[in-house]
Length: 404
Ligand SMILES: *Cc1c(COP(=O)(O)O)cnc(C)c1O
Image (cartoon, rainbow, N blue to C red):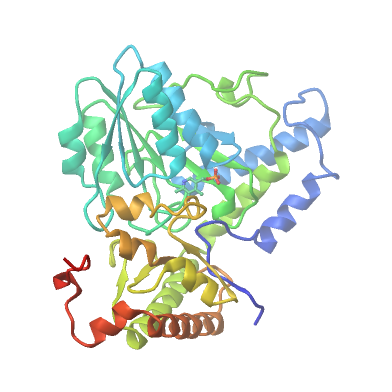
């Protein structure tokens, strides 16, 4: 067993060896520019890009012509939201999103607000889920776009995308979904799921960092975007810039493996997650799962350990790599905006840790990690006067802390 043990697969994943093998020839042996039409170097690169385009499209039920390559989901989100907002501004300037989105969506929406758009941020239920009814109530005549997280990178909760997509289509509103955590882990089909725009990122599915794709629907309806990058008019004018051929080949290979190993990966991740949670819940009291215990990503586990501070807990186990709160907010002391939106109190939000289990995680690693977590929580609770009071049967909510 190699230490430390990596259990932060929602932050990023290692490149799968099979993906790396597929990429390597495209760094120097086959190095052409996919936009070079006049020689075989360019054709070879273009052919590889075409193959990858099909592999990505196949995984999500799209056609290859609907795939636009990007540098990752952050760029895909910016292109989809800003590109659609600008294109359809004459139709309306109202956008609907949710409070549980990734910062890339929230910050892009803030920017659009500064530019005169109006954004509604829907509150989820306590499990982090946003229902179709809540979206329906927020729809207006001037709504042009709904931006909805498919599966949460923090708590794993899965939103009812298909139902919300159906509603959007009935009302002539576009649906963008941030499917960065859903693709490869859940069945995704842009047709039956009624999606107009979808972003995905290679490094969350065992591909390389810095490459991703945006699905842009071509029919029923044909979605148009205002380009956010000016240049040579690559990607049908939607995203200029010389294509990252090795990265794109890696993304294609990663998608292909996700499709072929779908059930195997799912069973493996869920098996390890359940194995981990079982040990934690048997050994510790006052622990809570954040998110929807049923309807969540199979390999994800976000747990609050009451009376223990998340950051201290992470310091308490030296050889497990995990995140407290969101990876993006863990540099600050603010509790996660997602847990806050779910009405998890600040105390429990600060005691939360996100674990996730990957393709190469072993049962042995899971057992070692669970033992370390249990040991650290027990040790820290021994130092906690609050936990001691609770053990003595004192109801903390009845205490007058001010002493008056
Ligand atoms: C990682 C992630 C992003 C950002 O993707 P990058 O490719 O790293 O820019 C956006 N949304 C979700 C849900 C993510 O998990």
